[in-house]
Length: 327
Image 1 (cartoon, helix red, strand yellow):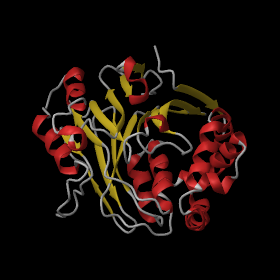
Image 2 (image 1 turned 90 degrees about the vertical axis):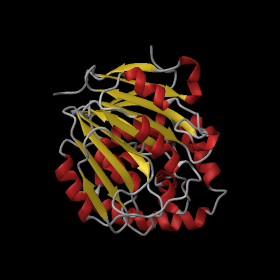
Image 3 (image 1 turned 45 degrees about the vertical axis):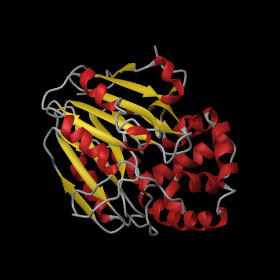
């Protein structure tokens, strides 16, 4: 069994992948652009164009993929690019997403939150293959992917959390960097690359491999902080590299403390899911809150992932094999 909103794509180039995804999601793209043009569009477009000029120097393959997507969806490239980079083009972003790593790095739970309630139809499940790379992820329509949670065929999982108090400047958008690191086969090399390029802003990146190694990378427009924490490890929207005091308006601290107080060194998949489903702190502050639109459990011991989508909540958690991982 799979979700109704599950899609597979096979391509031999980034352009071809974008073309196929654009054809499949054309309605979503056209709808999103029409809505975006109602909100400071000219300012966002101007910022988007400047960030495009920087990005094309470093990631031409991803630019090609967006070109293919725009062709497939029959929309203007710069329109698609501007909505693709989301909060790096003038949009504010809420504190969102929570993740947990346990069982010596072999069991990972991630709750994907939207900026506010009502956006459950903005995501689906995608499995995409470009040559020797396959990625299974919770996918935000009209983006490059790699900006939520997923697993690649080189044996690396990545989950992202927003970071509070990160400024935006002209540089490579954080969604592009998210995609780059979701494609990784060598986190050390790819992180070093990311640290040398101009960045618009940044996420907190949690990268975990099938051996249980963890890389936690905090990125802002100016700084990058890499640690290799031990399991069990949890993260919400706080910075490990600073002692800043954070507001709890979106449960940043409440979600973090709940996971910290309940995670154990050894847990079953069902125990982690129970934590991911907890709403005991109310609709705003809980791990499972009113903004939660998806959840993923990644089990490297069993080589499977389980995914829950709010838009298909009647299905519960749906299992997908990780047999595409080449280790």
